[in-house]
Amino acid sequence: MGRPSLAAWRALREVFSVGVSFLEFFAIGRGMEPARERLATLVRENRGEIERLGGMGVRLGVQPHAPTTVDRRVYEWVLSSHEFQGWPVSTHLAETMDEREFVARGTGPQREFLEGLGLWSDEILEEVGRGDSPVQHLAGALGRRRFVCAHLNDVSDADIEVLARMGTSVAYCPRASEYFGAERVFGPHRYRDMMAAGVNVCLGTDSVINLPAGTSRVSTWGEVVRLVERDGLTLREGLAMCTVNGARALGIDEGMFGFAPGGGGFGGLVAVGDEGGTELVYRWR
Image (cartoon, rainbow, N blue to C red; front, side, top):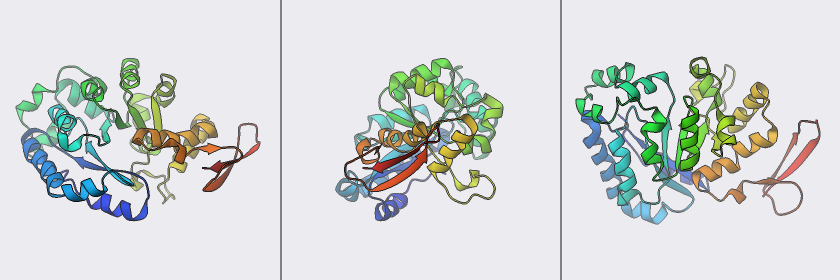
């Protein structure tokens, strides 16, 4: 359950020049200590390769999966551990109503799931069941390192203020949220409210299983098109969300992904129509 591996990082290094590959893991209840030890052992046994290559090109990051599958004390361990200093950190957060119930009350389908796997321990109740929202639950961790948090379907005004104050980046996955019916449960996603509050919002794709019927390609551009069609998002906003905002979230030089009119060296061209129907040609520098 949630066994981390370097396979994806090694494969991505062969085909991409820059990015972050996150080591995702689960660690909660009876599985908390074994999972933590597996992760520490993986990093320790591959320290030479990681130190030689981990800071160049496609870097390694660490991803405690979510507050429903990773104890908050493990988040704190990751942030305190010398092994992960300087690593980008990501997590899934505020995604479902089950998550809200589990974090606030320590009950619901997520608890039943852990019980069914034999992972439940009453020690979990030392960290959940205090009435907090998922964002409030992780606020202390978010304040210690700049996270990239996926989804954020379930947020209040107070939650948005926390995200802005902590410098958290949000990876919003529009088609995944629609696939799982998040808007029916929580209302329209508040990505625009987040951006207005100063939160860096970029676009994610989640998985091929969440794509609309007849679509086979995972693409952030597909997410942009969906937001333009559904919400009237401008193309300028959409381009930023799938280029420079994503680079900012991952700690990558934004200048590598900026689109600017006119001169300068460039690696490609893109032509789009703005709101007035005027064609704009951007050079990718």
